Image 1 (cartoon, one colour):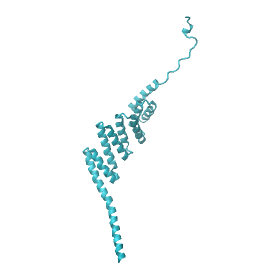
Image 2 (cartoon, one colour):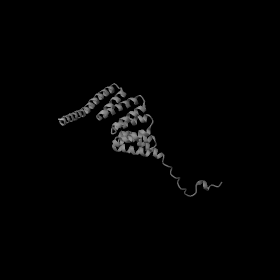
Image 3 (cartoon, rainbow, N blue to C red):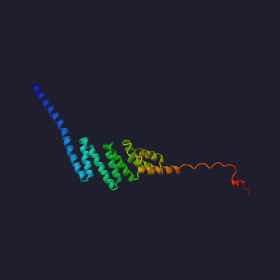
Image 4 (cartoon, rainbow, N blue to C red):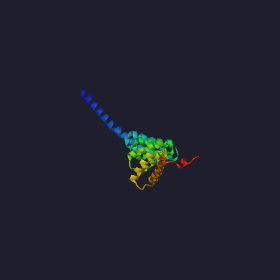
Length: 208
């Protein structure tokens, strides 16, 4: 009798534990959905910090909201850049990239802000990452070629310019840059040595 009672109790405990285990994920999902909805509403009202906080909590409970959180970080970055708050804009885009590192547009957005902040080295790195993801994107190649040109790295600027023209032979920006680069390369060429003297110069034949 005692054994039967003990078995019944153990079965009941096991059943309760199973129900709790199943109920917990469902509770988390429901809570994540609620937080995500509130975060979306905050984003609509341009309450970026509140939206980020809510969506971060939602993402902690359910990873499917990572894309939505990344999008809000990007919106916050754009808003900060519009107010010329470049450090906050760059920080927001960096957080977005942690969530969605394959989203090439974020590299472009961050690079544009870095250019406004006069940080051409970081902008160059971001455009390079963007080009890794989209090697034939003319816009990214043109931007990188421009940065190289400003750094007087004529060789790399010309290499990117040629890549643009291979994809789009009539691209006016690339054609203009190529003309400028060729002119600068010619100007940087060392002068040829003077022609060898043939016979005596007229001055040499004169007597003082």
